[in-house]
Length: 182
Image 1 (tube, one colour):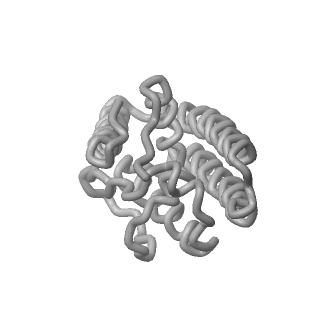
Image 2 (image 1 turned 45 degrees about the vertical axis):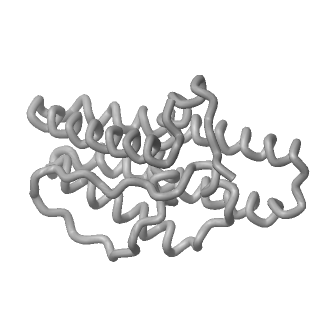
């Protein structure tokens, strides 16, 4: 079965995909997080599973999810070239990423346990709850990032803009390849 999104939900799906827990659930190779270094920004691997498919399946395990979130935190730390002066705001942003991942992991665990016995209405209600949580998480993440972003000097803001733009382009490209285009 091919999953498609109505065109009016595409912006919501893209916004939800910006939320770290969804990114953390992406099926990417499990590699240990690396220590931050100063390198030019690079794009991250595109997500390989449709959002609805990931939400329907039980999570792959807390340690893998935690590793993915930590890997993403380390990647962003490196790509944005966070300085010691920016570290307190970065730490707040990273804490929100971790909290969001833990919260979403619990919701996905619960959905995974109940999924086989859900009727169609319960499935839609469960998906609605996940979408609402994604929106809440994105609001928290955006507020934390705004505090960090506003402190960055112009050259780092440009770097952040490039990193996030590249990620958005990869998600868009992957969505088109997966048949989830607008």
